[in-house]
Image (cartoon, rainbow, N blue to C red):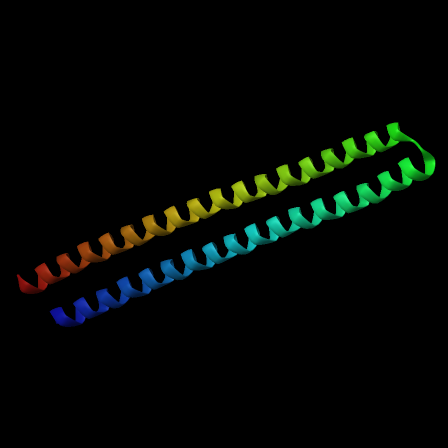
Length: 130
């Protein structure tokens, strides 16, 4: 009888630990994907903005001779790049905070479940033995 209870408890503990590990792994994978996508977006936006601005500056300065317009375009391009970088950094920080919260909750849930299960097993074993 004691062995049956112990085996059942071990099964519950193993299942809980496996579920928590799977959740943590999935969250970490999602975070890595989000960060990679964010970095790619930043790189693509920066490259596109730089290429477009260079082409427009060449056209504006060489063809039209408007240096002031070219300076305004450079300022606008800098603003666009800064805004995109800031947005991506904010997204990455938010994702990291979510990951930390999920991992902490998963660990707390695991510890609570294991402690509860161990207490229940000890009580059952004590009742069976006594």
